[in-house]
View 1: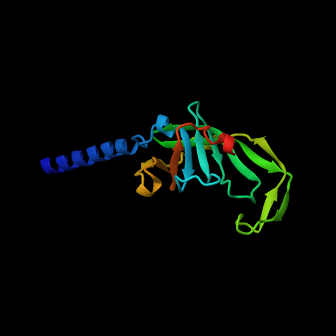
View 2: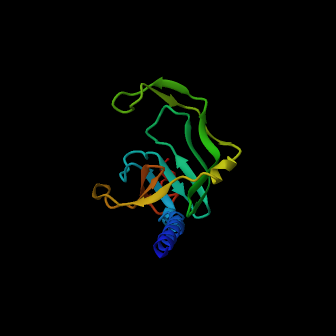
View 3: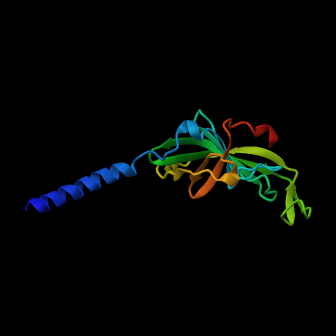
Length: 175
């Protein structure tokens, strides 16, 4: 009887403490998150790849790759929250090129057969998706790779992002 009670207590304590472990912090603090994070590479060429800008006031911007000359949607932004459940993102606007024309891409420079030229970049407001605060994105720190120059990195929904700068506005003048 004593053995059965001991096994039951061990099982219950494992269950309780295991669940508490599952609710632990993501391992990324809000202060660490502030800055510019580029997907897939810590190297900046003549343009930025897809990247996040996280600000201290709870705003974020997701910029799509500047190498993509065919998409009219250039990025989106909104509010974020980081807690033990993960990273919550709510988009409340997007940046989109309105107008413009498709022209033949320049072989050797652009990877697409056609590129979107001209047009006007506009901010288009949208109603925030209230479900976004229910279903968080997975976020965790990752081990910096030597080939990435030791830049800090995080994994957001299975995509690796490398920190380029602590200042989220550092690359704004270059866009």
